[in-house]
Amino acid sequence: MAGNHKFESNKKYFTISIYSIAVILIGCLIFRFVTQWNITQKILHSIWDTLFPFFMGFLIAYIMNPVVSFFQRNIFDKFISKEKKRLSRGLSIVLSYLVFIGCLIICLTFIIPQLYESIRELSLQIPSIYKTLIDLFEKYQKTSSHLLPPEVMNVIETKTLPKLMNLSNQIIAQIIPMLYNVSLSLAKWLFNIFIAFVVSIYMTTDKKILKFTLKKLVLAVFNENKSYTVLKTLKDCHEIFSSFIIGKSIDSLIIGVLCFCLMTILRLPYTVLISVIVGLTNMIPYFGPFIGAVPGAFILFIVSPMKALIFIIMIFVLQQFDGLILGPKILGDSTGVRPLLILFSITVGGEYFGPLGMFLGVPFFACIQYLIQNWVEYQLYKKKIKLDPEKDA
Image 1 (cartoon, rainbow, N blue to C red):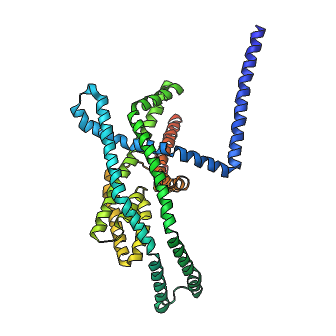
Image 2 (tube, one colour):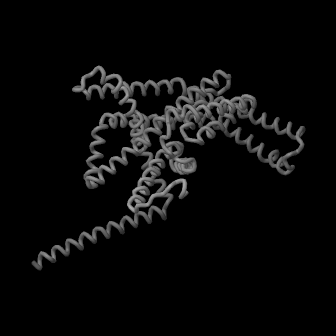
Image 3 (cartoon, one colour):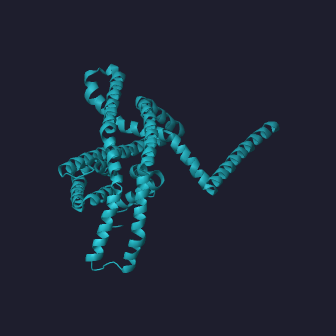
């Protein structure tokens, strides 16, 4: 008996030692990551570059899943018997990705060349832009009532304008290398998209297997009651995330197309370039329309101040239509996030993950807000505390 007791004690202390060593090692790693943050950033950036195609593949599969379900439910399930459900699912996946490839080919064939030409043409107009600024400055000096102090005028004349000229000359001299670098970046981006595309096909095909595996994992980690709570929470977060991404994508596509049509009718230049900018930035809630309008208005102001004014009025009307009619019809209250939290999520997401972070930050923080609200409500329920938002606010 004594020997057995000694063995059990050794086993217990051995386990404690393993946990202690693990905690110390994790603490050392965290300390190293924090104290050598530049190296940590490079490592994280390298990991992100490696995993980016898989993340994009998941995002494509996430967006394509409702399209696949739509085709399966409304087309193939009506003609194919329930016994052949796998065939119906497979045909739906094939048709959905054919539509996706068709849209991609249209973008590469028509939109990308026009974007390239618009950017090239705009860069070649930099000398004339500089001349226009000089003329406006000289005209202001002759006709103005000297609203700006002489010191400010002197800084503009001796420093700002020459710097603009030097910058324009540098851009003109480097336009070919810049376009070459952009082409290389585009080639790398297209390769990543191809990998993401393949990954998304596998994920879409194995959707049921992935869901079943996740459900087994949750049931294995938590007890039965907790498991179903976790699964319901994950389902609710999925609905928040998917409704925002899919709804906002459709909304932004419609706004981009409407912008293109209106600019064509109004005979405004750089139609494709500005419409793409407006459509993409419209995916950012609340502040996206303002972000997209600024570069478009600036580009058109260089060409013609009157055209810039027409564009600003057009964008204002278009965004009112989006905010009051189109957006609520498509999105409804998909996130329930207040403008302050939206500003926070856009700022944080954009800082760490760029434009993609500005877009995905909103549904991500909407899910975080939902989880916190659920936890707070549960804690208040346990403590039997009831609050009235009107009286207790």
